[in-house]
Length: 141
Image (cartoon, rainbow, N blue to C red; front, side):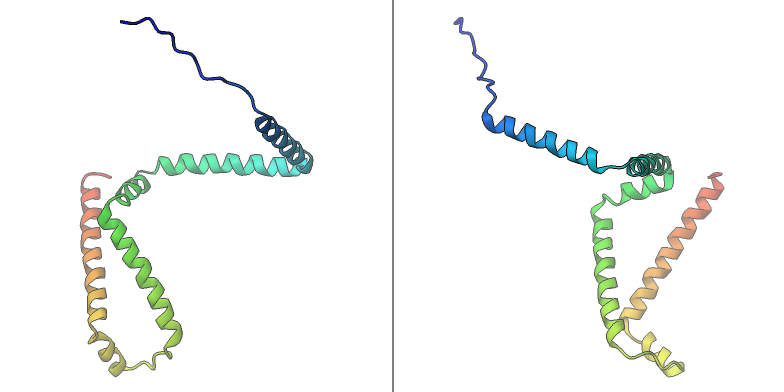
């Protein structure tokens, strides 16, 4: 065992640090001068409402469950697919002529694989959502 003493690194204040502190103080003083009483009141009200909203959101069991689900990779892929689908749908919708209507148009639309997949997706969502809602009511939720 040796008896060595460690020395702390020099904690010197350098000239650039003092300049930065002075600039920060000037910025704070300018912000104080620029803010009126009305602005301060509105900021305080907005901050207060924001805290109340955050409190309500964090006590919402359903929202917290949804937020936890958003961390799952398969849900992230689903959301990316939904986002891409909405973008493509919007572009295609804007560039195609309006539907003429009628039974033939519906039959043509129904025969497209995308329509069938979309209806299947909505059907599955409805099935599992209704099962979940019934189960919640059975448990008294």
